[in-house]
Length: 59
Image 1: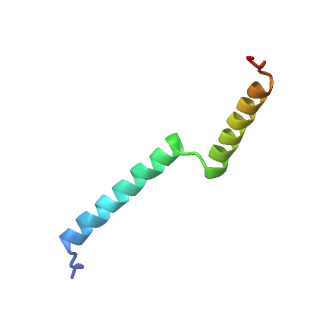
Image 2: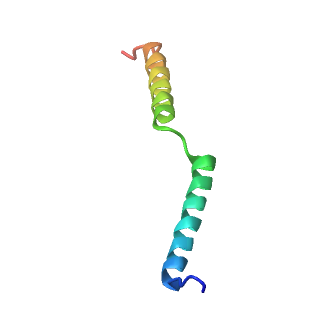
């Protein structure tokens, strides 16, 4: 005899799997690690500080 399945559970499980696959694709396309974001922010701050250090005073 075959196994009885709950169609509602099977549908919800399939939807969860589809969402997870889509999320994984989005992470690969758009995702960056927290360390990468922090490194970029630190680089921007350093560049801004260097630029400000070279400014002439307007008196």
